[in-house]
Length: 239
Image (cartoon, rainbow, N blue to C red; front, side, top):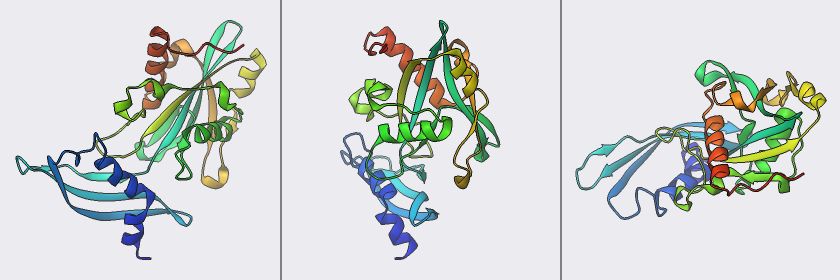
């Protein structure tokens, strides 16, 4: 199958098209028009399309103005805020790895892309935590922080909607552990080497988390966690 045809038929492009026609989509209501899509780049992950770059020609019908429409499509992802209580102090678990697009090492939440087109954000979150930290989490101990958002948002966060389609489901895990677990996690080297992952685990005091990293996932998770606590909608910590 030709690359452009494969790109148009891919779940990445079809999901983008579906979003444009949804209730909050820019094509819904007829005020804007999509006249052309130009596929500019395709990156394969094995036998399936991993990333797409394309240009969409979108015009406001009333003014005739063309709206900026360069899209990097990478699809949905999931991330987890892991809070571990030990000796009356709460710690957050972060990962550190080289992020080539920004040219630096970044401290961030354990996170990863959804591997298949089934929308299983929770499953992806649990898988990524185990791969990146070695911690195995149970589904019934997880809280979907993005589910507290208004339904009109799609209950996901969009870290860079001006250029990328990525939508992220944020989850929370809270647990109580001994001090030896904190010590074992600190500096642990993990990641799937065959996928180029060279990851180091960091455990930081939660009270300092807000200023220790510029990762948007971390800062969004803190906001959702603190606000849901304030509103009294966060489930109690299981003992």
